[in-house]
Length: 391
Length: 115
Image 1 (cartoon, rainbow over the protein chains, first blue to last red):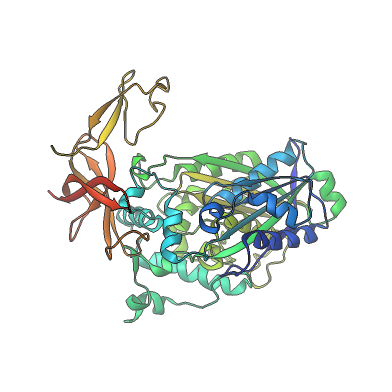
Image 2: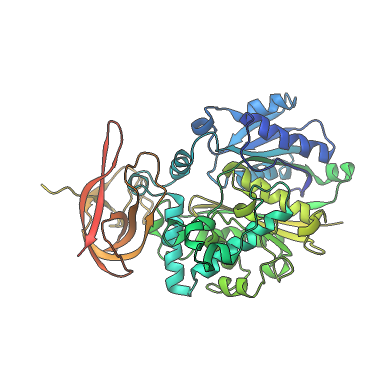
């Protein structure tokens, strides 16, 4: 297997975007191609979850290939729920590692604001089990809420811990010009003041409005290349050193221990094994905080903290910029936004930005290794990636 | 006749499934629909719950109670809750009712109340 490097990155502002879906993907891709210094690719993968349903468009990758004048490169769209982005990166990795391709563009894109919030919620809920979950009106916030209640009962996580994650990540987004939410929030405003419960109502008890990521439009892209090509292009040598992917039961209620996220655990374990790294070696991490509880639970499942101790590490500031393992310094899904198909690629964009030392105010000092975790379904399809800066 | 929701029992190894699977998760040998249907019990205890405030477009109610229940036989299912103040571990009993209405279809599922 050949080594694979990230030679270019690009992103759009995450917000409400009034552009056609393929143009959003193409814009991020143009930036990535320019950043890498290439005008041709062997293959492109476009990660997207909702184009056929939300945007009334199919065969998205063909549209993007033509829009970018990349013909006759191979092109395919990858739909893997909210883990589409990292699944597409895995496909790109395999294409380069196998020796089949030397330069692969991986773009992720979603345009969810084309429909109203209720329809967007329903669109995401279609990933649940059709006959035993979806028909009951289950939404992703509902799944996260039931999971949160168990976490509270078992480990002593409180609404205060959840709010702390929300404040940390949303305020981190102020240091990321591409992030969706550019509004500072405080514990006072969302938890402690008499107005807090009006500012921050329940979405699904015990989860509140500021526990959930926004519904966003946006695109992100990276260029994956072989070692030889990476040296030729002369960009910082950032190697995609490990990939793990795992699945879990479709119906969430079937899981033996409902507070475990076994697919997260397995994906991270495999990525660490492949890269020869341990959780202690990671300098900066992007975790999939679609809901605040997920950052806490995932920080345990990937191995940064023992099970049940993620919230105490958070209290000590260990996951903040300057802490032991800074998590979601670019805002995470909570602050940057969560255009579902784009998220896994946007996480890679943030880690590469950090490993290049281009993080500006949010830079993790001297970061050489990174990890990103893209969580699909309610934990039933998870991809973990590790990155190492080599030069 | 009271409506039922069914679990699926593998005729080769006896593993119970809910939801249905095409291949048995126990023996992985059964791949020709060799399952017997077994009605799920309707009593159990509440494992976790929520009240949802932003429902998908089709719903005409303001909020919806949802919970995961461990049934008497140890199997679990998700259902709607009609319980004012649910608590973890409380005893519940279910009945099969319409849980979702679409233009041409009614979907039936389990609705739990306090036992």
